[in-house]
Image (cartoon, rainbow, N blue to C red; front, side):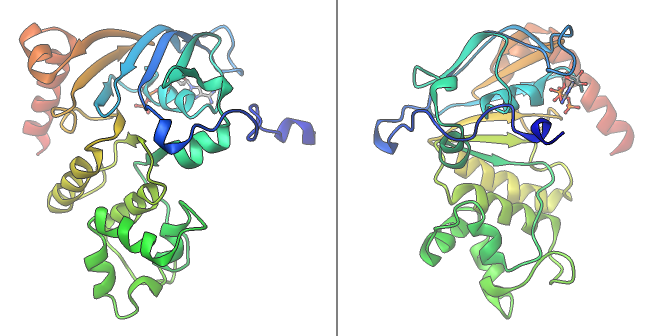
Length: 272
Ligand SMILES: Nc1ncnc2c1ncn2[C@@H]1O[C@H](COP(=O)(O)OP(=O)(O)OP(=O)(O)O)[C@@H](O)[C@H]1O
């Protein structure tokens, strides 16, 4: 049935907050949510989470505990069952979903997809109306401008299948430029550095630290090693936040985060 292909949430309609009056502080208040296909199984239960404007909040917890669901709700791919999510005090259900996703929030994914076209087009995908100057600026912020210009065809280099071979770290930085070209006030980092070798990871990590300055950032962390510098770390278990605080605070507390950290260190000693 074609009707079942329609998005759950209409993509147009609702408020668009002008850039200069947009205060990107985010509040999840008593959010309860179950996926429509499993309505009796709550994935998040009365979740409260604050992301103050300009700060980085990392959500950690074992696989399947609802971390990615938090990001999907913030992008409003689903509506909450009860409670609310507000940005700058406005309930996101009153915001224009298209504006929210294309202008307010930038997403950097674990496994970025590049299209079989030029690097320039791949970056412009984040903002199709962007000028060349905007493309170069986004690439500079993503520490990508230099390596792109080192290719004989520069920004016109074709990537993807049958295109020039680029490394995982370079791919990641092109994807970062794609997210930055929208100048988003909010960034969602879905564990952006997991598939890289240590050298490339260092470069990407440094790039991410730079671009997080001055933005509200939600890190969906599938490992713990990348979250130490977050302003706040929220430990999620079965859709409930068990602990919240800075790395130092949570280590001193010797609770769930401390134990997860020890487990991860143990693993890297055994395998690394
Ligand atoms: N589209 C969906 N429909 C139904 N259930 C889903 C859907 N997506 C995820 N779930 C379920 O919701 C729960 C939380 O999943 P989620 O992806 O948010 O966890 P996560 O903590 O991000 O895990 P991971 O670290 O593996 O990405 C899991 O039980 C998962 O099976």
